[in-house]
Amino acid sequence: MLGLSAFKGKTIFCLSASHPIGQQLSVRLAHLGATVVALDSNNDVLMLLASKNAARIEPLAMNWSLASNIEILRNAWGIEPIHGVFDFSWLVRKPTQYALPAIQKTENLIGALSAGLTVGQGTVVLGMPSDKSDEDVGVRAINAGFHHIVPQIANALPKIRLMGCICPNHADPNETELTQITDALMMLCHPIARSFASGQIINLLGATKNS
Image (cartoon, rainbow, N blue to C red; front, side, top):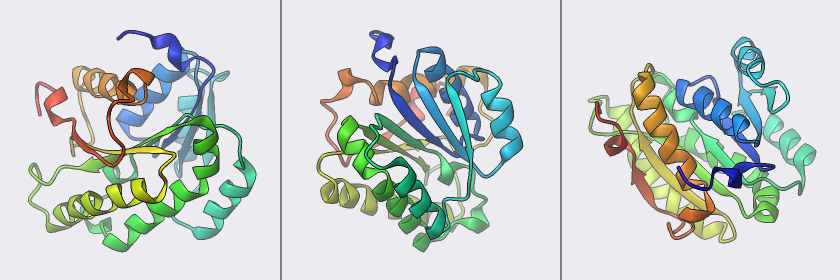
């Protein structure tokens, strides 16, 4: 990848950092000089992740499905610049946990960070489950919900670039898949990708040979 120094000194949020994609992305971005705020409800995984680069990965254990926690985050972060947000929360949910009203919580979280994202001219990338590799009706419903809400949020927050990315549903991608997916994700958050219009849904399944 070209221009990797573009991440140096940037602040990136990684939500559901316990997912293998989130873990690898956090470590790679930290290695490139970014400060990574890794959020997850699993404190043990966060501590292990932070130990891989204690100077650059800041663990934050919280359940952001609670409105009170979202408000705490909004008030704590304020207008400090945020240059990127990667949300993998929908990739770690079990099919029984899929529910369309829960997508609203994703929108609320983005709203809580919107001031910092506006100052940092940041990009938000929402990981979406594929509706083609899983027969579960809940997965298909969430996929359809994201197709509706991604352009809706993008229109509501015109100063923030926001995209949905369809990722492999399985929870144990191999090293080759992880490298290919995180390459694609970093590219979307790179200044070179500013030509990608906000509100798009991008299918990353083609980024992996085995998907």
